[in-house]
Image 1: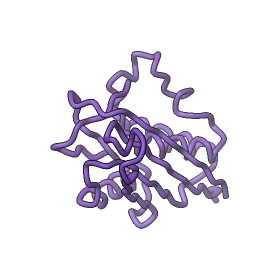
Image 2 (image 1 turned 90 degrees about the horizontal axis):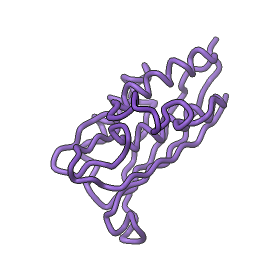
Image 3 (image 1 turned 180 degrees about the horizontal axis):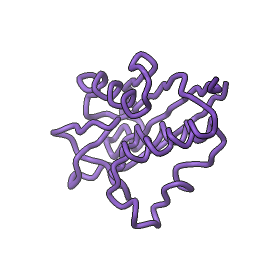
Image 4 (image 1 turned 120 degrees about the horizontal axis):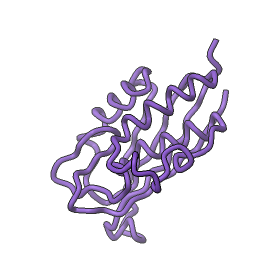
Length: 158
């Protein structure tokens, strides 16, 4: 078994749609970034790459490469999942925490879990997504953006 940790954060950008966990959340400002800026999928990507010792999201999809401008992070996660499988691992589980003051995530959690599971080819019961606030503290507490922490467990394929 291998454990990986991932983190991502982005500022809000009201000119973009909010993509989170591969799900579009209407009525909320999007996130600034080179791709679609899906901070949840980016943190998952980094946790999977870290667990498999395959680098990080920036080494695979650098923001200096125009191929990734506006990229759908679901496609990036699918590519990383294939690379992790090629390295001899399967995803045991994902546990992620999204930190933001808004939007409220509870109404979207089940859809995010289902979409992440679909991309990874695992059961939704192996994907945990939690929403937390920062209790008004710091940049996230002031509503300037969001951050995501994620741990993943990889198991050796047999």
